[in-house]
Image (cartoon, rainbow, N blue to C red; front, side):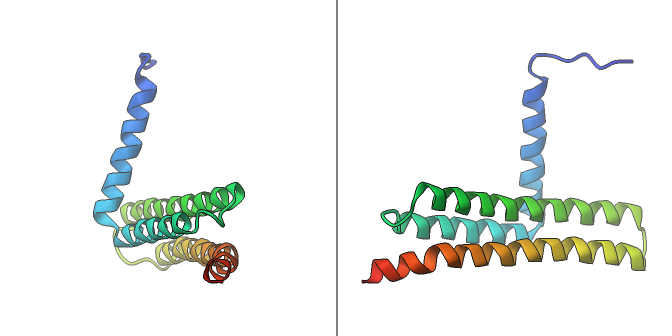
Length: 127
């Protein structure tokens, strides 16, 4: 039987996404840490607004979004593995570790991008 789609069905999908985001915020301290660091980076960028170009802002926002997205994906994978593997399983651990490593790599990359953008601007602002 085919589901009847209403013209507001797409709006429900956004609601589900926000429920997932708020659930993750409540349950995942690492996501909260990433969100707080992202906010701190945006505040630093705002303080350096005279030195920031449009491209700098675009890259900073993109990288923050990628880290948060990666953390959400990691959380989803870990929850899925927990459902499938009821007890300790080496392969389940491996999947969770690799998923966490992907988040770590994205986080390290974002720090490198932030340093590349911010260090010259901070030096310029201090002159």
